[in-house]
Amino acid sequence: MSTKHSKAAENFQKNTAMAAWHNETLWMVRAKRDRMSKEIPEWEDLREQACRLKLYSNSHLEELLLEFEENATANGAIVHWAKDAAEYREIIYGILLSHNVKHFVKSKSMLSEECELNPFLLEKGIDVVETDLGERILQLMHLPPSHIVMPAIHIKREQVGELFEKEMGAEKGNYDPTYLTHVARKNLRDIFLNAEAAMTGANFAVASTGDIVVCTNEGNADMGTSCPKLNIAAFGLEKIVPDMDALGVFTRLLARSGTGQPITTYTSHYRYPREGGEYHIIIVDNGRSSILAHPDHIKTLNCIRCGACMNTCPVYRRSGGYSYTYFIPGPIGINLGMAHEPEKYYDNLSACSLCLSCSNVCPAKVDLGEQIYKWRQVLPDIGKANPTKKLISGGMKILMERPALFNAALWAAPAVNHLPRFMVYNDLNDWGKGRELPKFASESFNEMWKKNNVQGKGEKR
Image (cartoon, rainbow, N blue to C red; front, side, top):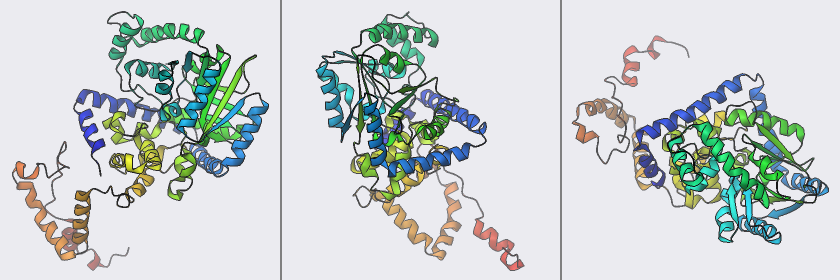
């Protein structure tokens, strides 16, 4: 298995203060999620409903998406279909070009990150501005998101203050978050007012009504779509939900799981074009339908992009979002990367301890850890299995299948406790890099069992 992730994680760990802060901050969000979930007696029932609704929707995509298209069209929207990232980009560019748009505002959309929309439009001469505060910070820093809900979680407020001083004329040395937010708000206000078109993603698309539902905490999606008469929304086809009752299940789970809030500050429904304007909706596949052909991985499409799996993951919290090679980090990113291009993103499979905390917190019951385990089993088939790990596994198999050899190894193991440190901690011992090895017990469980003769006493099990 490649060491790309492990090397990047090692670099992240060199800044011990930053690594500790990142770990503690994300764990704080996980703790808020736990408190919120305990306030809902039917929490586990909601998770089960969400899982079943997603499995239903994803096994009835054709009829639900066509129902959505019919209702959205009746509402006055113009619906487009994109089979891949290239079609998605071209459709958006074609709409903007036909309206001579030069100034374009966007609210946060991981789909646009996936399809690399911004660099494409900027190259075509269209000024694209991210209006989510975290995304705007990263855009000015020329950095990608490191988290799907809190994209700039790895950026400290001192860095933001220095950035805003340079880009927006903020006061030198003023790192107060409220002040910096007001600076960004003032800067974005003129951008909103002068935008010729606006775009949102979609947290959910409701088949029975043709609604696009967008959940934000800053109101930037609402502000962006309120000014220009040309609006665009785009969503991956797995965002479809059957009706408003189903939507209610997901909105109760989304914010509680992602940020520890009862609900996002703004849960906005978009249905009609503005008076005298146009509303375009793009439904994007880009490999999603092919996931349906993998029976072991269908639940990947259950994901509602809450980020709870990242907040709880001990590897993500201690290695940062940029250590992953797929644009979405953490447990869900590992699985999505493998579903799309396993030969390219297989290195991320090492970024998992199989603790299954991600599976246990997922609001739609995506079996994230279990899927990572299954993906690891295909590494030999795609020629990406690590030869050293294969050798070690083979050696362990020989040891485990031979009781006499196994017991001899147990008897000899405590001798390692007394070896000189350089013989134990060296380049051959990857486990010992950054951690202390446990001490071998002087008496093994086997020896203790035999000495106490539990079986001989006739105890019943």
